[in-house]
Image (cartoon, rainbow, N blue to C red):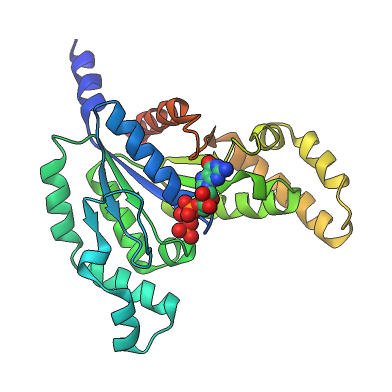
Length: 266
Ligand code: GTP
């Protein structure tokens, strides 16, 4: 029963979910859908928006980077372009991260899921010092899962699929955190092709051979796919639709699996 208590404690413990995805992958729409889904189940999440440049958020964020930094103002003040403005805003926000974490800590009894939306310019979060500081700080408090959102219809060619997975792979190795790839927009295109390419090496090779631009690109991809094969073996994936809500039950099953893994490894 000691074990029971332990697993109960784990079930109630807060979970950080960091949403990462290329611009247009549907990250924000998915956040909104997840938010609504958790509200319906009477487990409202605590939502933090880390995208200073988002103009319209379709949901109410509990903590919003835009409340503390005005990225347009930052651009003017420091003479920066849009990307520099976003990065500098994230840096300014990160200097106050300890205050944010204190608030989060107070909410940890009431909320189970803490959702973090990140800048649409994905590399600003994934390859910056601030992004790393935020990620590491979160991971040092509660189990933290990185969700990588993929625009499924726009990744249906072998070449874009592979680039997208290479990117996912690099984020996984950089963060070293439990990881879930969410193939979004499955109301438009099912993610079956992706699962098949990830589990059946031959199927991907076959898709490559069907491509018109043979030669260098294909031989590059041939060697890359050998590397990715190892990555796929440990990868957790789910198909979702931010539009219809399909796949969200499974999404949370996979999140819980990832959290279990976190407890085993950390
Ligand atoms: P950034 O704000 O640039 O980071 O984009 P984002 O990744 O947050 O994407 P956003 O949520 O703005 O969605 C991009 C477009 O995809 C919008 O037109 C959405 O309506 C559409 N979209 C998002 N999710 C889905 C989905 O599950 N199905 C369909 N059919 N469209 C979707």
